[in-house]
Image (tube, rainbow, N blue to C red; front, side):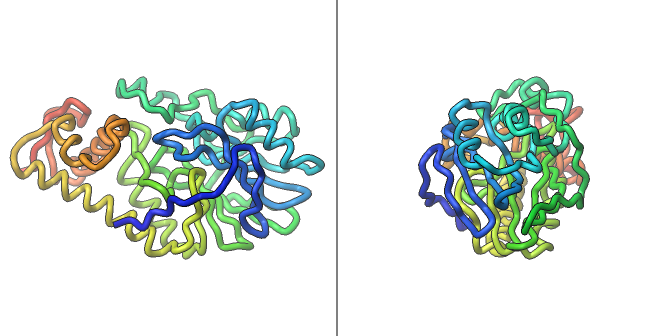
Amino acid sequence: MIPFVREIEFEYGRCDPVSPLIRRVIADNPGPFTYTGTGTYIVGSGTVAVIDPGPDLPAHLDALLAAIEGETVSHILVTHHHADHSPLAGPLAARTGARIWGRTAPAVSVSEETGVKLDAEDDGHFRPDIEIADGDVFEGPGWTLEAITTPGHTSNHVCFALKQENALFSGDHVMGWSTTVITPPDGDMGDYFASLAKIQARGFQTLWPTHGSPVREVAPFLQAYVEHRRAREAQVLAALANGPARIRQMVPVLYAAVDPRLHPAAALSMLAHLIQLVREGRVSCDGEPGLESEYRLAE
């Protein structure tokens, strides 16, 4: 079982110091994919970096501007292009003069490609001023951030390590309150497993997800995340051991304990598992793997 951390104390629009170098302002956009809302992080003081500005809500922009009044924003850093993370980057840049750093959104959105519309829609217009590469370093007075590319949830996902606190801003790659949705064709399960291993190897003391509370017991939490994915994989294989099946038949059974509002997202995560299992030769289907394909154990 994943030791989820779901307790959080906050007020929308309030700027809370959460560590010696980190402040957080939570946007008023709660939902099944965003939990209590998007947590925008401000790193440093005087000259600061802002991580995941969030949705384009005037009240959230006002709250961020109030939080950094009298300070200089040197970097606006975006973990990925979903509409609860990146849209406010442009308005915030316009008001502060800061440049936007991130990885460009893919050309085709998940909803366009699969027909599945999720609450956490793509921000297909996201184009950073500066493209981030793995290992890029961003510095200010008393703080140093390192970009760690972590494809899986999306192809352009990137986390940011805070050297001084051995902490990681994990975006949606790892969340304390829930597992992460992997949505093909942009999301990729094989990439996700590799990115989890990459983060495990770093030995971080704290994870700061964009949604929800921090994760303090990092190593066991990440291991439980991996084991959960492997368990889902085993469930899919066990279901197919009873004969060929389609995703729409398996989701209500394998995700019976999950909020039905999340079943469309669960279907995409199951598709991501099946794409990886087909790649590995453990499962087969007719044609390319898709939401409507019939799957069977490989002979």
